[in-house]
Image 1 (cartoon, rainbow, N blue to C red):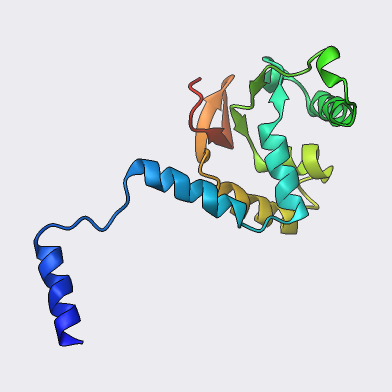
Image 2: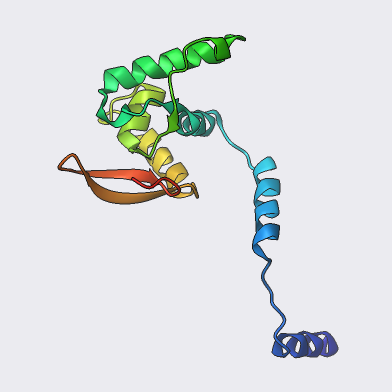
Length: 151
């Protein structure tokens, strides 16, 4: 045992790098994703986050969001959806827990405390989004903003 420990210390002192390079980390992330369990609620949230939305999505009302979400859901069940009018053109730049509650689960924020905690946990662990407070149209918004979209 002492010899094993001594060899490990010698290798470490020579400057051995104990981390993986970025390419290998990316491969590991894909592999890890294949074996990660997702319940139905989490799958619905990720489907919602990957949904393409119109450019003026942020200016729309909640009722319009629900209407568009329903149209997209119907088109996903139709084989020839490419021939139909495409509703969305871009990914959502930001999303709040309140929006997810209403648009995905049709629950008002006052009644959805348990699922709101689950949404927060899922979004806090989502590497594509970060929680921030920003001013949009003069109002402070607490939401999750997509990291790779600059607005």
